[in-house]
Amino acid sequence: MIKSVISVKLGNRRVFVRAGFDVPLKKGAGYRGQGMEWVVADDSRIRDALKTIHYLIDSDAKIILASHLGRPQGWDPDKSLWPVAEKLGELLGMKVVKVLDRLPDYNVAHIYFLTSDITKKNYSELTHKMRSGDILFLENLRFYPGEKNNDQEFVETLASLADVYVDEAFSNAHRSDSSMAGLAKKLPAYAGVSLLKEIASLNKILRNPQKPFVLIIGGAKISGKVETIEFLGDKADHILLGGKIGNTFLKVLGYDVGSSEVEDEKVAKDLLRNYKNKIYLPIDAVVAKSVDGQTRLAKIDKVLKSETIFDIGPETIRNFSSYINSAQTLVWNGPFGFFENPKFAFGSKAIAQVFASVSKGKAFGVVGGGETIEVVNQAKVGQFIDHVSMGGGAMLEFLAGKELPGIKALS
Image (cartoon, one colour):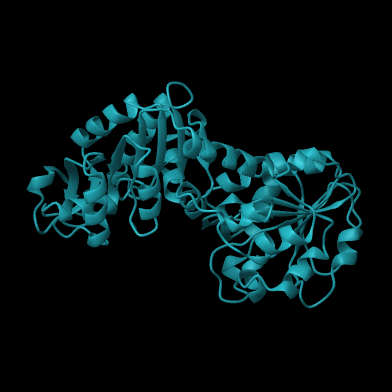
């Protein structure tokens, strides 16, 4: 059984919170508004952890906060979590300061960003000296080789900093990292508020999906989604496919997709063989000879060899919307076009709006994956969707029926 963080008294205890702060960064005005620095481009995952962090602050806990960011090779300043600490301070209304090996003597709680290498010195005494409500924010966990290897020496180093472990990193739950699987077994372990919501929402899809059940899959790589499609395929009534994945299926069916990128055609053939009567593909598209070129609408059988499919067209939107509107259960992962360019964002945003219009009412709707969340945020409809999952790969593996190491360690 997984225990909730809100089920235990944590006053004056050191609580290690493994957060999922692997967020996109961009160049912008820094914390103090001076110069161009790395800043957080999308704070969805930071906001998702706020309920747990607020609970710990209100409980007078001493919070040790840790996460990874990207895939750095060693100590890379461009992958520092300092911009994330700055954004968290902004959201919490707390001052953020960098520290090396001691804490300043402030009368109010602060976020202390520890820039030092925690494997070079024992910092457990530092965490004992923290005030209740203070946050010690560690540098990127993937700066340490021991993190990805679930190295027991690194687990011991992390465990020395805290008395209790809280997992609030569903986005990393499919990894057997030291700060996930290892540390959860070393300390009394609890699930964060949002992690429990993730589990409950996705279990609802797996255990009791109301019919009709519509599965919506887009994006680029079919390889990471095939197991999810296969596992949910028998439960789903309709499977709507788009993006580069949709292009692959169209090509397998004999359509000329021009210069559009495609992926694993063998996988597409196998899925078509098993779910042919459930799979629905784009019937028209927004095409162009280049990203900067003149766009036009084309029926799928009228795409020229020199053209690339960049978005779904209005007839596809209408067709897909009819299935979404009929649904009582909805799952969506992956955009339907090159949405990063405003010229090709209309299709994905339209699907997001239709999806949101039936969620929290007629249908139970779940969306997940970084790009899908970006689309939902662009369309400004996240508040109308039952559950926006912070996990991309973790959500897909969970919905493929797999046991996730980070969750297994909690139980």
